[in-house]
Length: 103
Picture 1 (cartoon, one colour):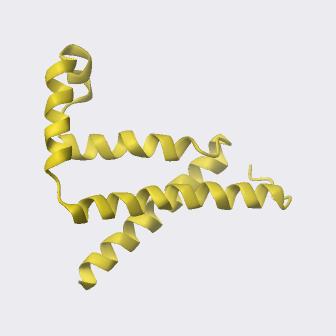
Picture 2 (cartoon, helix red, strand yellow; picture 1 turned 120 degrees about the vertical axis):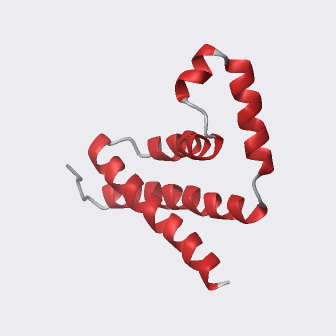
């Protein structure tokens, strides 16, 4: 149970920090929230990105099988990372609205 809490917290903090840095550097508030979905799919599917171009039908079907085969707890962990990127976007927007200019 403690490991589950730590894993959820780590994903939240890790993707909050990454999204915050990318938001400061690229000045695109919600970019990381959209990219997060692709990052997670690349982590789970185990398929080369080039395979999506060369044989998309088999690649997408294999990716769908892998995504549907993961457990409920994995979805909770990945959702905590997505929430981290969303919270990062909200924090950046509020900081910019308060007058802080990041880079």
